[in-house]
Image (cartoon, rainbow, N blue to C red; front, side, top):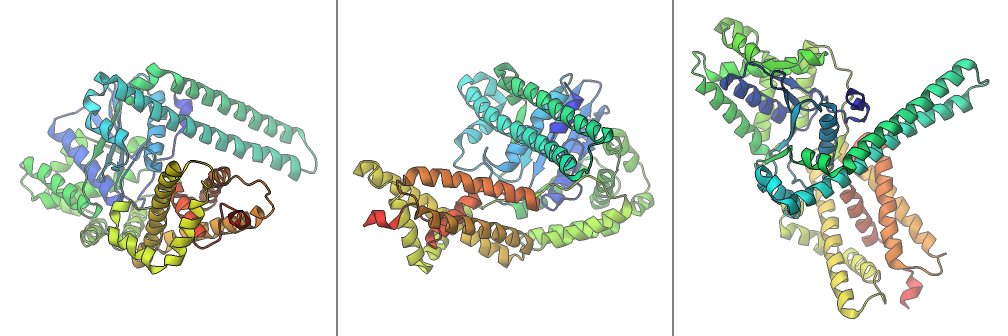
Length: 504
């Protein structure tokens, strides 16, 4: 088991994706400058190959994979990007058993105040092996994430192949030998996928294996606002260049190196995307005329344009990035690697001032009253008065906050002209609204309704609906948004957790 695990690997070879475009290339530049400064002649950084960057030292059998994320929201272990990164890291861990590997997740953002495990893991990661209780908790959490991910990917691959078999059976007028052979090939592929998945699942179940893997993971949360992170990284890069004591102004070298990184990242062959000591040295040995001639001004101007926009509030960034992508496509052949789906996340509550949340509630008290009334009836006659009051108050608080954050999020999408994201979220809301309305009608025919059971199972149905929607539209809308939409539909009377007759 090794390279064949590539079928389970998450696709991360994304050229010029909108989120984190500038951030990632500046991070890569700093990595490259560190290689040169430390005189690491045997190390090479591969851009966007098997992960955002892959640092390889063949002589010492060392490999380091890095994911780089620029976000305006906080992270927790349930965040889709972290779950994808952990899954991808584990597949790479299995693909490189002969190497001393490490896996780094780097972001401008911070850990959510609600995720105590990730916070403690991050703070004590250098001494994690000495804290067996914490290590055990991390192993359990990572195991759950990996099991879920491998099963989802296995089932997705098997479903795709099964659909091809059914298509051959139903569309063919006559089952020829060629068709039988193709169907047999698909069935063999399904069995091969299941076998490989079982092997990976077995390794996930091995605590020693998972312990070794967890201890190789490193987190870096810079806790810098998204609009400031690019400025900070550029300053760091210029500082590194200045420390080299070159005869040319740092800004000229910066432009030349940024251009080189962009060009390397566009190489069709992964092995050609290498940034190493010798390449840096050859660039720094160029004449000023040669350096200036090899700076792509279109890219550099747009690069600066994006940074300016970031400095002014991250407004219209995607427009500038599209211009860069167009310029890049003129320089090198377009990659055939599919661009991963956009991740749409609900901002954390601390992204909005408390008065903003109160403003939403005060704007339409009737809807808030509807929501509170329905929640209070979930637990009706099920628990004693003290427990009931506590659970009801807690759930009302959670539901209210989610609903308000969702409505404020929609407002922000409109203001910032993120029309495509807004359209996707509203499209999902329409489907949730339909399901909520249908469920309200269906409840009239239910004789012995258990509100708690109904509420619990209905949440699962809506999350499943969200996943199906994401696959169809190539988006990744976080399930928290689905929950928020559910509570909004409850406030609008499209969803009921109880029968009205039961309340009389």
